[in-house]
Length: 161
Ligand code: RB5
Image 1 (spheres, helix red, strand yellow):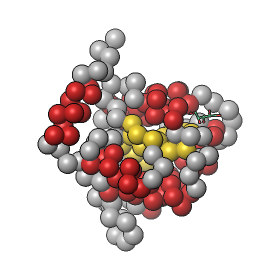
Image 2: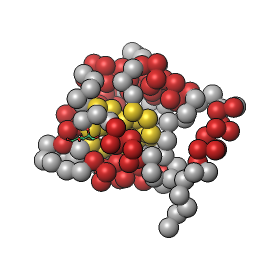
Image 3: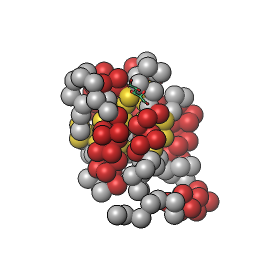
């Protein structure tokens, strides 16, 4: 997978699993375009239109794609990003973050090694969402003391049934 040759520095690579509910469908469509422009392989798990659906179904699908290694990253869009993040974080191995500012978008990679980004179509415009996505993809995990904290976090994961 290649990073962008112009525009924001985007070193991350690998397939990105994406999902939305009806309220995040248009934002997902926009960001699938952005990911393609950046050279990423996109695994679009739906929704495929604005028919009403339940965000947990898509959050679990994307979370499992990331946790299993089928995708390196996950991107979830709903009305606020909140329901998606609450659900995705219940999938063991997922570290999902909902953000609406660029500092947090980058920091959640640097400090939290977030592997799923959640955005709210009713919260951020398309331009800001593209910036948030690029900032998140640009952040590099700093390891060290942050790894120990992530280890503690994942000790809270429910054992696989
Ligand atoms: C759907 O109306 C809305 O509740 C959902 O997209 C999301 O914002 C929930 O967190």
